[in-house]
Amino acid sequence: MALTLVVDVGNYSTKYTYEWEKKTKCGSFSSVLHTYKKLDSTEGDLTRFKFGALDYWVGEDVKNFYMGKEDRMYFGNVRKGHREAQIRLVAALYKVYEETGENEFNLILTSPYESMQKDTDYFKENIKGEQSAYVDNSPFQFTVKNLIVVAEGLGALNFTDEVNCVIVDAGSKTLNILYLINGNISRDDSHTLNGGTLDNNTYTLANNFFKACSYIDLDYPVICTGGKAKELSEDIQELGFENVTVVDLEIGTGKNKEKQPPYYVNAVGLLMKYGKQFEAMFA
Image (cartoon, rainbow, N blue to C red; front, side):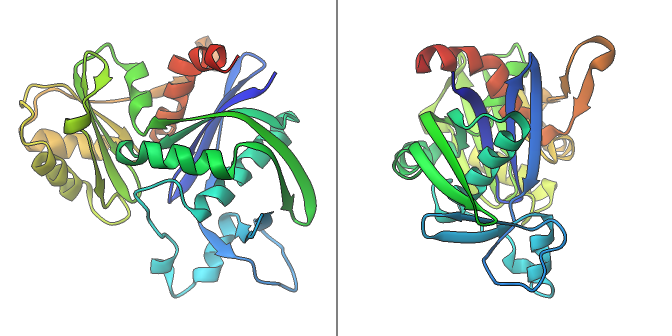
């Protein structure tokens, strides 16, 4: 049976989560990429991934390619469906393969709400089915049996009893706003705004949220998620919102329960809330 896997491809980092041996597993790696350049030595965290016509270095030490030009490290895109995302996705699948030995996947991807359909079409065309990549010149065969795309931030809904709320997901290059009514996303009231935590401080992001959602009552529940969720929630409260919460993520039970970074909330929440539903749908 194919392994159900959630991958959140970000501009700053790529996160993934899955269930293995009745435990929720999480992992992440730097999303900074550089087109392949031949080097005399590949010491450090550098891995070459080749997928179709794409040929990139992946790893924490890729940042060294950008010494003195750090502003070029992050090329943001409000759509997840683009060339660099394919390499990040293949890298995530390979890491899970290394951890589990599995190479058949049911894939759940996250995307800005406004580009979900375009991203779905893009990834189904470019990643679904039997695929072949090269990792440091060694072949990596994998199969994406099923693929769906879900709105970024929606995983936070797993950690609240609210069904009428606004989820504010602060990404590295975008601010994702989901307005929910009875647990359903309101198409007209949800937004993807350019500019995230790499471009702005959280007070600016809070103001951008307020401007885009001026119709929201100040007592309407607001749930903050993302890498700087706590700081963002404090700034939103300063603007007068009265019911602002932050998702605290813990994985495990009893003494084995461990607190996880907030940037895992979206992926883990989707796996916990919808994983079994998705598996039934895939079956």
